[in-house]
Length: 405
Image (cartoon, rainbow, N blue to C red; front, side, top):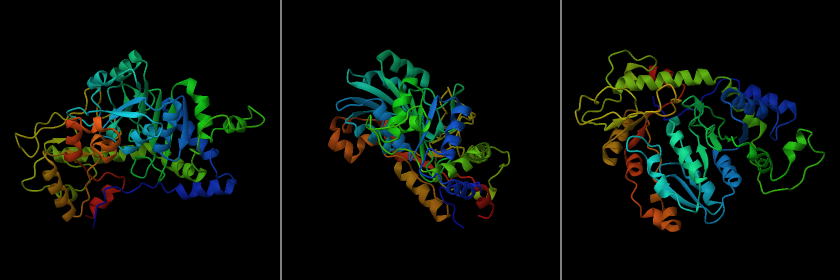
């Protein structure tokens, strides 16, 4: 028996809704299922306007266009993030300025932003790692004071909150991912959230290849034409139909992930209470002799791991709690790259696939070639998470697989 890192969730309705979309005769995009999904997010989370996209990468590229990024503009974003966060702005000619992570969490350290702002700075891109919110009050205050735009890369943060506000709803723009590794997925998919009303009309034009086709479809104009740059950012109705089957089960999916997350937490903090949903036999596989964790992504007050006085628990940021995130990731943090590799290999021998995550973008070959000043910078916290963070399996069917493990 093998435990994969991820297995996409299926509600059982996906093929039914895809068949419904095919039978409707409208499968090219912006049809009934696209509207259902967009309305779901607008109504549930209070987003001003949502536009489904073929990926979160596309949503970020739309955001860069809406921010009117020009060659020479500077955009601040974390080094510990996926390459799409940076690429979307590099494509428009921006220079990327990297900010380090916090010492105790992969999210950007907002206290470092001010010193990175120059007259060329145009925007700040916030990444809510693992669905845990960045300190948005402080970030928005800095951005407003300097006249900067804020884009929330909430790729991992569907159904996560910051002080009662849905992530993706706080900055001028937000982006989300429905890639197969996310809580809610349609294989490949994404969404742009537009919170600044002045950007909505242009967003619809960019979304539909630089034309007023959306306004035409609503009957607001009698013809449409080429009025701006744009691309074919909208997804097929087949993707949207699949996504709708997932959204109908959002609460069920989130509850299951929360139970899995909490079982991991109980095990690694040596909580004496029984696991709720994962089998003890599966959890015992994580016991590897002489292996030491330096931190754990938990807000528990429990001191230490494996009764090792040199270990410590990593804290969820003070402005967050277990009930504001979305249980997207459960990770362990190790003292070194070597200890992480050894533990991952030990788990693999036991049939469990645990994986690392992002590599610091400021140390990439692309940064070395195009942003040598950024390549030369020291961002120790980002590098620490690149070398030492290990993600454990987290998916809907894990409890069932664990019972037969």
